[in-house]
Length: 172
Image 1 (tube, rainbow, N blue to C red):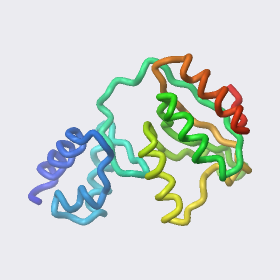
Image 2 (tube, rainbow, N blue to C red):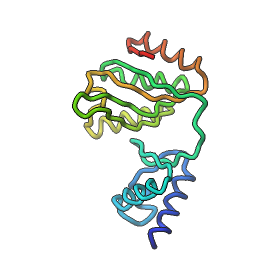
Image 3 (cartoon, rainbow, N blue to C red):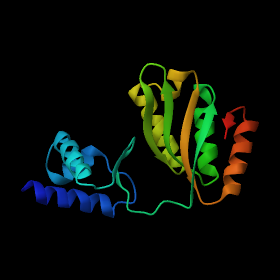
């Protein structure tokens, strides 16, 4: 594709028009460049103040106002309950924005998730399996934080109660 300005405009147009994250490979193909060029262009656009988020499923342009409420949940569970934890949250209409662990050596480590549906959770867990990567929570023996967004505090309260019934410890 032509010059950098043209390429960045097209990249922003693709992200703005997409309702779902777009992979770096798909962006590279659409722009006729390598994935590394896309990564570089994204970095430049972010430096210009564009709100482009990198998720496990691809890039997303965040142009929506944030939901009414946001909280941080402190959670503890073994890795085998991760699917149950995430599915429960999204089933109650709660969006899981990230996971954060407090590592004794590296300090705060955060991973962007942006999970809002069962499909999002399944795709994330497929990526975990396919990549052979370990979950951040394994670095802290299952202790981690999630930033969550929700419209209804009652749904969050119900979700927390459900998680606790499933043996997942949640501290508010």
